[in-house]
Length: 406
Ligand code: UDP
Ligand code: MN
Image (cartoon, rainbow, N blue to C red; front, side, top):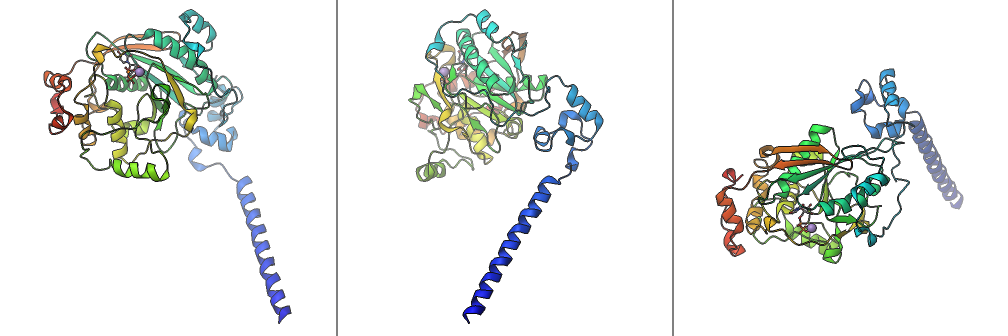
């Protein structure tokens, strides 16, 4: 009896070992004997997926023409996609001393490898991300100087291919950050294909270059997740009026963050979104004149479509904010909570597809492209609505006639 048991026991073991060995063999064969994926064949170079080139090598490009094109591209000296971890990162940065004034000439000299218009591409590899960095601006030129002096070297070390678009609002009318960002996307699209857009406040300085300005799937990213001004406590969106539409279950998110750790409910400061995601939510709402609300509206649009906001680099994404006062032409929008109430209902009818602006001037500076735009002004009704300080609960019951408001 004992012998029969032992025999069965060993036979079972032998079968298992044989099975494991054959599995390993098959996986090796599959791994090293792959052929070129058929979807790469006959594709124009501009649509060659960099991930495919990285995975299958440059030889996987099917036609001689494709290979020739790729080799002759100035960008590709070694014909390699940039490593998934950039090699020149330095880690934590000292942001203390950088407020000292550098002149534009000094900054330009230190960044001689940035091309006219604030363009850059890594010299020795193909960037994984083509990023349009969009900065809304008015009367903060000294902050722009500090920002670019600090960030250009970081972006270069991060191996991204990028261009800096500064979108300046003309005149002294009420500020509209969201319209400037929408206009930034429109201008970037006119320029080239970008994989993702960064919406970048001018006063936020990154404290660790391992927080990469790279797009990530499947969700949009909050880059400035911890800011010194807010004691590095994660910010959250707080609705003062009940959010009417479906898909914004903040209660569920709150419960989840209690149970499983923080869930990001904020999308301001520095945030990143892919071109496809931007189109899905129809960009930003143009209705937020003055300070506040436009970033929460974008958050609500995204979350209505089931997106979460990610922060793949965790604590490394910390920022210092250059201290400033609030401008009188960017006064707090007192009607923002009421507007937010129906954020996702308006999404497909108001946003990028209803954007109107006029380019006043277009200038390629050495470290950025400055586009000065006229974004118009709010209607009389809207001006009254957003400037009158009424109790939030009272405004919550008024629906803004947004079709005539911009
Ligand atoms: N901004 C600007 N000029 C203004 C108002 C705002 O350039 O008069 C831009 C600038 O990029 C700034 C962003 O809009 O970082 C957000 O405004 P602000 O910094 O006042 O808001 P905060 O996030 O500090 O409350
Ligand atoms: Mn600020």
